[in-house]
Length: 237
Image 1 (cartoon, one colour):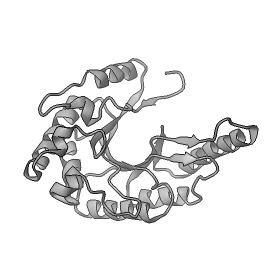
Image 2: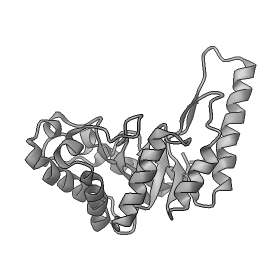
Image 3: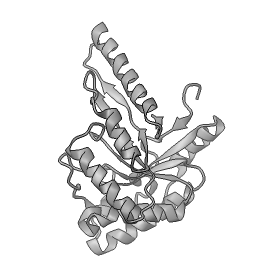
Image 4: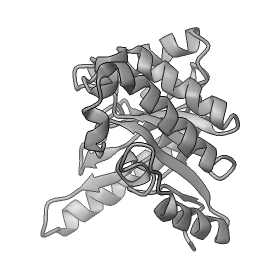
């Protein structure tokens, strides 16, 4: 509360917590965090509405003909519940494979690439003022995976989908911050999108030594500087 002005729930807004069985919603854990954030003048990033992981088995076992309705109901119910309480939110989390192809999961198997546009439109209809994000890891530098995300973002924007931002999870290894991080942020910003560092960590081998700790400090400073250099980089968490 003293050092941060934004909160992202780790698990409390994910599908296995919020809708563990079909049509049965549980927002208590998320509500507790929102109340804490509001009491300390912190904004909340919603995380997340659609993800292949931490997905209740009832969703993945649905016939493909029923997945879209289940997804839209889940998004609408949760986004409506937190309407006006989340500043932004990760609508779809980790949709890509490392080679930049779309991950196969219950949603893409049922709807193809169109599930992402549908998810964002559904979230926007429920909470028109929230900034809506796609979020993924290993997209921080320019590579096959970030190229896939960039192409998707271009396509969504061309379709008029209300995508507002890209979340860079930023799960790094000490000494391996991508040299193209700033340029990559900038190319997404040039599309008219916000970018954010959303899950920053910098893994270090234990026991730590002074050299590794110094490199870790340098790495964190590098990420901060890269974000500050891009006017549409709106936050770090």
